Length: 214
Image 1 (cartoon, helix red, strand yellow):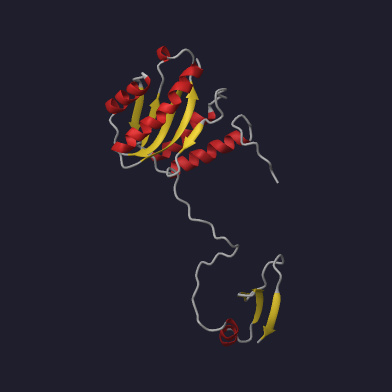
Image 2 (cartoon, rainbow, N blue to C red; image 1 turned 90 degrees about the vertical axis):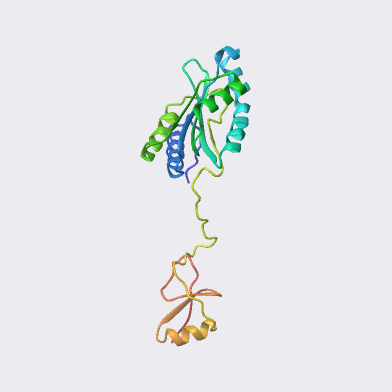
């Protein structure tokens, strides 16, 4: 059994997390790339900028959702060479005007510089996410580099609770013993459980009970 630390700095866990998030983002069919910055003149230090601006993101997202039917995203925190934070969004949403977004972000944080562009080729999304995650170094203020909304990732069908997967089945009203006797004369039947029978020997890990040979 392998035990993983799940840390970004780990040379084993880090790349694995990058590939997984990139695949989730690709399959989510995002439409828009957004980058939000900070204004260094409004803050004493990069840490102060992150502490003050981070809570404002939720307020901006709420405003976008009031204008859009959908705004689901994967968000990546990144720091410049001088340490100033900025946030990259890979979002699934409708059209957002750049001027409106810039004005809203300026009102909330004092920073007017935002970048927004439509995704033209879905095939590039995977490598876009890989680029911003793989090059990231440790940010001492927080261990949470990535945020993903619950509805962003593609829905996955729930796994069956049991170990038996039925591709096709038919419903019959006869008692199992009668149905077996009438339809499988001359065959050897194995009982796997009180309500389950099989025509072929099952795995040795399952206790087999041979009923009878008809």
